[in-house]
Length: 175
Ligand SMILES: CC(C)(COP(=O)(O)OP(=O)(O)OC[C@H]1O[C@@H](n2cnc3c(N)ncnc32)[C@H](O)[C@@H]1OP(=O)(O)O)[C@@H](O)C(=O)NCCC(=O)NCCS
Image (cartoon, rainbow, N blue to C red):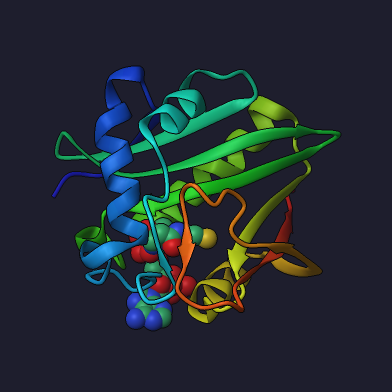
């Protein structure tokens, strides 16, 4: 297997990345990964229009990870201004998870947050019930801020399967 190549996503990647994100987060395909939220949430997660906007809008950088000529991962870095960037839409193809692709992509996202947006802090939100994911981010230097936010952010793309879901906000100081 070849090394991971990380590059900005292009408009031509929109459909493939939309499918990849959906399969990583929810539905039966996601159960092949280690963080599936299939038991917590139903719904589409994201639309092609949203992915297209992440690729084309100013202040947004959608990074794509390619291996052996196939798109296997993505994440978004969004400029929030005043030295803050948001990290999200972090997805690795379920069958490719657990091999270090996520770690490499996140490291590049942190570099890009600094170089592209002058960020000093990187913020993200995670479902409070996703203990294994929160531990993963804590091992990478993120810390809980104590802030919580309502879930879902947009009810068109998520139907909670239980009524106690909410986001916790994590932040990492970037060197
Ligand atoms: C989160 C995600 C992007 C990580 O990508 P990945 O390629 O699996 O990540 P890596 O291979 O770099 O790291 C895997 C980590 O999970 C750990 N891990 C693997 N299997 C695990 C399991 N069953 N339980 C707990 N941890 C596990 C590994 O130990 C490793 O952590 P470490 O590097 O600190 O030791 C990927 O799992 C994913 O796409 N998930 C679905 C979408 C999602 O939930 N995104 C995040 C929303 S906040």
